Amino acid sequence: MKKLFRNLTAALLAVIMMVSFAACTSTSTKENASKTTKEASGTKYPLTVKDSKGKEVIIDKEPKRIISVAPSITEIVYALGKGDLLVGRTDYDDYPEKVKNVESIGSLTDPNVEKIIELKPDVVIASTHFKDDVAKKLGDLGIKIVVFYNAKDFTGAYESIDTLGQILNAQDSAKSLVASMKKKIEAVEEKVKGKEAPKVYYVVGFGKDGDYTATGDTFIAQMIGMAGGKNIAKDASGWKYSLEKIIENNPEYIVISKNFGMKDQFIGTAGYKELSAVKNNKVIEIDDNLLNRQGPRLAEGVEALAKILHPELFK
Image (cartoon, rainbow, N blue to C red; front, side):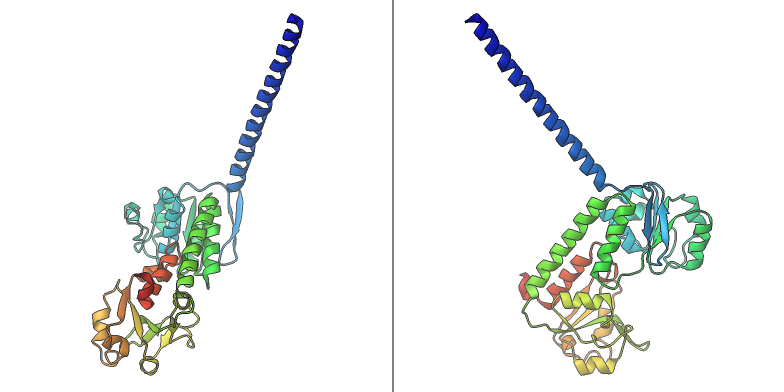
């Protein structure tokens, strides 16, 4: 009996050891798999990216010092959780608020090359207004430069965010950001679906120097459509429009930037003050940075437009 008991005990211990070993192995396998997955989601350097100029740029290692030469780029960098890596930005970068603590390297079109060199960036990320001669000066000094032109549509804007995510080793953050933007825009489009689209005119410039708006071939025109509006300038191109055309199409809503305080002058100017939108108090100001900067706040811009054009849907 004792022998049988000893045999049973030994067998039981063996089973326990086998189960424990299997559990440890399973845990170890899961941890390794998790680690592998985590590693796989990170950027592998050196990384080769192609910028908007078609130029291939090799990023040798994960950047630790970044200079942004566009407000939109700066906003993306912060949205990706990499704002602490910014050592330089332009005079126009004002969002988020804490970016004002970062040293300025001047304007978008004429940045201070000496200041850029002094800040010793691992990479300079620029946008549409970055001049070729400035890029050449920096490139000749071995400074990495990636240039993103403004995208023609939202797909292009999303791709820019994804590429920046790769460069900054923030791919997961980039994917999450793009997904959240798409979700917000889809929610807006669902709200305005089937609703009558009011005629809208977006003011870029007006007065003696001419009338300028988001014509049919612009990014903002797409946003107006997503927000459930009918852009009266959709058949025009190149931003140029005319007062005669505005009067002829007589928009129900006029959207104008609040950043430059243009509204009072607009509604008091001969020609414009006779429009239905002006008479009906439907000249609405908007933070045009939500529309002009192709960054993480574009989805907020679409929602802001929808709230102007369909206020009844957002009560």
